[in-house]
Image 1 (cartoon, rainbow, N blue to C red):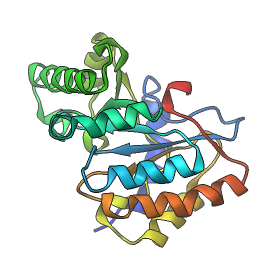
Image 2: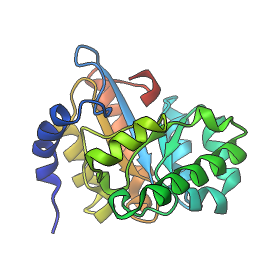
Image 3: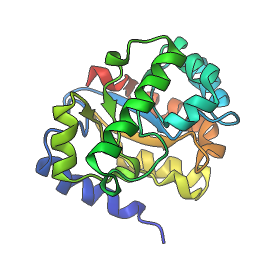
Image 4: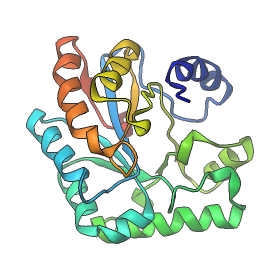
Length: 218
């Protein structure tokens, strides 16, 4: 079962309930953010980078630690092309299923893998997107205690179930507004179509006056 039509309503409920998460940017500006989860992937991330480079836009990537360890040069390529990098946990296990020790270990292991691959100080990598968008108030408290910033979303086209390029694109175009934080995937689920989706979306969003920023500017 697909839940794409449910996410806009869920966003309206969760954003005011959990204001200490980043849900979107400023509503009075046409700045929007493309974000990509679950990479880097050896087949899907590089074609995506080429599309982003063609349009000269920067995006934000939330890496899985295990994928960075398998593809360190690709992770470095993402960073060297001017994109923002954050954490998506080590192996995509939902944060509520982890103990506090396991959660901290997952984040630190991912943080260190990204830092080593991208030649960054681990302290520079502090944005965290919970896998599957799942968290609890306790998890948010822990993330803030550990000096991480939870980064969520406002547009979720459910690309990971591969409903088709045009379907994903139309969902984004129907939901996008000022400050939108758009979630797509360049990993195993959804990554096959991501370059084509972005290639379709970017010029249409630009025609509507939107411009692209990374989440650090939100």
